Amino acid sequence: MLKTTLCSFIIIIAQAAPPVLAWEDHVVLDAVARANPIIQAQQDLVAQHQVPGTLQTVLDNTHFVARLGGVMTPLIAADDVVAAGSSKTAGVTAFGGIQMRIPVSSSEERKAMASKQVELAKSMDGIKAAVLQDIAQLRGYEADLKASETKMVFYRDQADWLKKRIEEGFSEMEKLWAIGSKLTDEKVAVDRLSLLASSQRHKVAQYAGDHWQELLSYLEGKTRQP
Image (cartoon, rainbow, N blue to C red; front, side, top):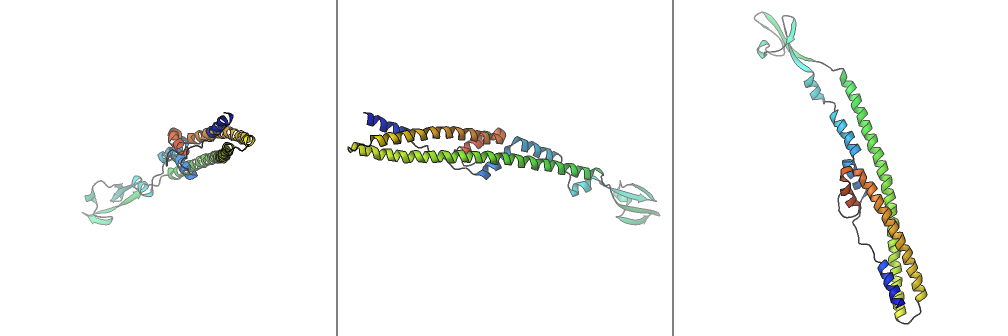
């Protein structure tokens, strides 16, 4: 009866965890970069203060002018001027062309834009460093957890062999008790590391803001993409 109870106890605590999908560091970083609220806010700020391109700047600050009799006036009617250049119509000298204004604020806008881009880069680098640090911690927990689970499988195999030896009449109870004690210790370690790894996964997933559940499922090996 004692042998049966001990062997049953060993089999219960030695059951291995179901396999899960592996996750990759770069996939986690990409998911955080897409969904992190701080990064998103910085990107929105940069997008709202984009400096116009060269063509748009020309269009915004250029207008057509015409000179009639030495007076520079805006060109209203195309018929007033034959073409860009000078011509004489009804004894009046006419000149048509373009006039461009270079905004003084353009350089200031570019400086402000560059400053915002630097702030965005710093925010991304800071968050990336924090995520990598937490990923390293999670990898450590998972590695230790895997090691303890492997030990449990090894001790379970030993327990199965000792059980057969006892059933064949060999006196192996002391060894079986020792294996049972080791299995118990590893079970405690597995439970502790599982809790730590789970907590660390939640911590990493929080970097994804409102999309933390998708990233958590990926870290738990339930999905192939966050």
